[in-house]
Length: 365
Image (cartoon, rainbow, N blue to C red):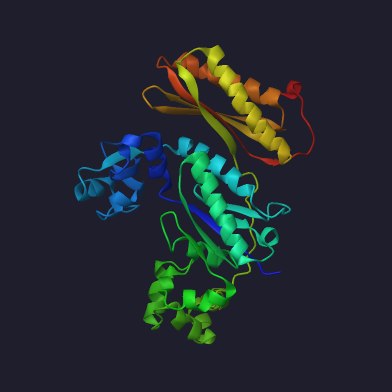
C-alpha cells in the first residue's frame, strides 16, 4: 500500500489565538513577544501575524527592533499555558483522523502547533481521499477552535512537512510520488527540511544551489564533505526519500480543557463546578486511550486577563477522577487564598501520560 502522511501546521498560532480572543485585534499587526522582564519590550519576537510580517518583522528578532519597524503594531506577551490548552484540543482533533496505529506510530506532535498524521490505511493510499480528509480536518478545526491551519500531504514526513509551507496561510498541498521531482527540483537546498544554514552554505560552496543540483551531485563527494550518514541522507532527501516512522515522545503529551466561567467570580463552589465538568472531559479522553497521568496543572485567567498556573506532580501514575478533583481542588484553594481579582476563565490539564499499568486508589495518595 502507498504510504500517505499528512502534516498540519497552525497559521501564526500564538497571534491567531490572540486575535480570536480579542476580535478588536483583527486587521492589526500583532507581535507576540517572549519578554525578558527586564524592561519594556526587552526580549525577542516569538511569532507575529501576516500583517506584521509585511513590515519585515520576523520571529527571533529583538522586540525593540520590531517596534522600530512598525511602531503601530500591537505587542503582547507570550501566554504559553493558554496556547498549550488550545493546542491540546487541536491535537485531540487530529488524533481522531489517524490510522489505528500501535504505540503511537500514527501520530507525532513536533511542536505546540505542528503534527504529523499517518493516514495510509484510512485512505487506502489514495491521495485524492487524503485531500478530502485534509479539508475535513481544516473545517473541524475552524468550526471548533475558529483557527486556520495549512496542510501538506505526501508519501513521507519530509515531503508532507515541506508541502505544508507551500500555500500559507490556510492552504492545502498534495505532493504524490509522481510529483516528487517536479516539486523538489526547483527548490533551493535550504528549503529541504533538515538542512540548516551551515549545511546550506557548504552545499552552495560546492556549487549546489537547488535540490535538483543536489540530486544530480555525486554521492561520494557528499559523503566526503558531510560524512557517510549525513551525505547519504542529503542524497536521499533530494530524491524525496524518507523512511522515518512517526513516533510520539513518551510522557510528553498533555490533555487539557479550559472554559469561561458563567461570570467573573471568586466563588469556590461555582469555579469548582466548572472544574469538575472539565475534569470529567479529561478523564473520558484518558479512559478512551487507556492512559494514566502524573502531573496536574490548573490555569486561571482573571478579569484583567492575567494568567496564573500551578502544577502538582504525583508520586505514581493514576487515572482516577477522584484524585484529579482532589488535587485540582487543593490547587484552586491556593489560588483563591492568593488572589483578590475575580477569575474569568479556568482550565485543567494533565501530563506525564503513559499507558495504564494498574489502578491506584485515592488512599494511595
